[in-house]
Amino acid sequence: MEYSKNIIGRKHEQDILNACVETHRAEFVAIYGRRRIGKTFLVKQFFQDSFDFYTTGIYKISKAEQLKDWQEKLRRYSGVKRTRPKDWFEAFYQLQDFLETKAEQEKIIIFIDELPWLDTPKSNFLRALEMFWNSWASTRNGLKLIVCGSATTWMTNKLLGDKGGLHNRVTRPIRLAPFCLEETEEYLQSINIEWERQEILDTYMILGGTPFYLSLLNPAYSPAQNIDELFFGQDPILASEYDFLFSSLFNDANLYRKVVETLAIKLKGMTREELVQTMKTSNNGKLSEVLDNLKKCDFLRSYQAFGKKEKGMLYQLSDMFTLFYLRFVKNNHGLDEHAWSNMPEGKRNAWSGYAFEQVCILHINQIKHALGISGIACNVCSWTYKNANQGAQIDLVIDRGDKSIDLCEMKYSIGPYELKKDYVEWMRERRNLFRDVTGTNKTLRLTLVAAGGIKQNKYSSSIQGKVVLSDLFLS
Image 1 (tube, rainbow, N blue to C red):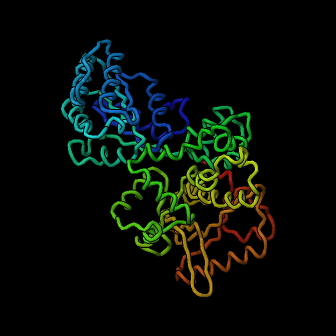
Image 2 (cartoon, rainbow, N blue to C red; image 1 turned 135 degrees about the vertical axis):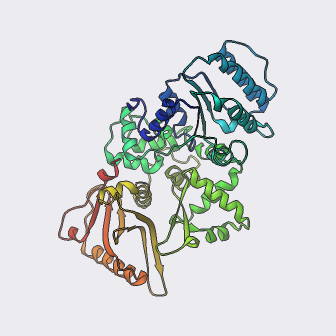
Image 3 (cartoon, helix red, strand yellow; image 1 turned 180 degrees about the vertical axis):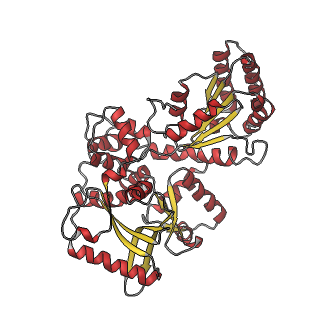
């Protein structure tokens, strides 16, 4: 198919939407993903705003006000003023009456944005939607119902996970993820920002791949100036984003923030038991729900330590925006409008090293491609060892199905990273310790992911796997 020139990336999602449009049967498409990720933009651009009915939920208003807005939207599309519906069942009956006047159309496109915000307490919205789809819409060939929602937990638990009449009714669920580095570069170019890839990486380590945050960047400013402006300047637009982000996504926003801020204490991640002890909580069922929902919204990742089972699962805060906010913005209190530009080099370097590790983990497919193992089954994990005499940690272990293991080191640097004798010896000692402790008989490969490239010298041949910044920008 021919992809929209106005949509950056999202080719897989466009393929799904195109397949939906091409079928003759009724389709129910649910698009979900965190706030600011570009769901509405995708749908509007793909369908070029050619909807037979379009409305959007409004954040934190009453059912009566939502129904009033629905009434007005229906008037605009139908040209007929109807009485205000007394409930959602009547609202959907009115929509059905209007759409039946379009029975001769080959396709009917309905777009309901921010669906969860329509589901106010005791509104029965979900049951009315169920009635509309099951009793009428699903029987209309060519009808396409597209719904979106930023409240990912509502979308996955109440809509996709509905145990009632909407169970398995969504024909095509689409989860919209943040941009990767390649898509970020393409997007920045589309808004006339021509930065070097090192600058794009530095910005990605703060804003992540969230299109809305990237859209706020000013082409006239350097990356550091932009971060000052967005987080530390006068009335910085992203300084208040953190609180609204959680309150708009989760009903119990305080609990979700507490879990996230607890994980931020130990950047390498925590086990479930460590979280329980640190937070002093006894509600394990609720904690499981919170962790699962945070994963669905791309705030954290879970992974196993090498050789450990489910009980050794680690939870790690992985959202770049949240990591940066909690480290540098939350307690800044507006003391320095140029806080990032004036950040001491030691603090900046420490942050950059950790943030780059997270970017690498988010781009594990690109790393596998660079290593020539895209088609090989792999388990991505970490490894930690500690006894009374020594300890070691490897943040990225790629356990391959071809009887090899990549022990990865990730190094952030502006220029080419120079391998030195003592560092190579340290890596070899750690590799030997890994073999002794784990007892593996697989081939152990020393692998280096270096943001600034690798300087060629007599020690560079000691590294079997090499990944550089340009590799991370591949699709």
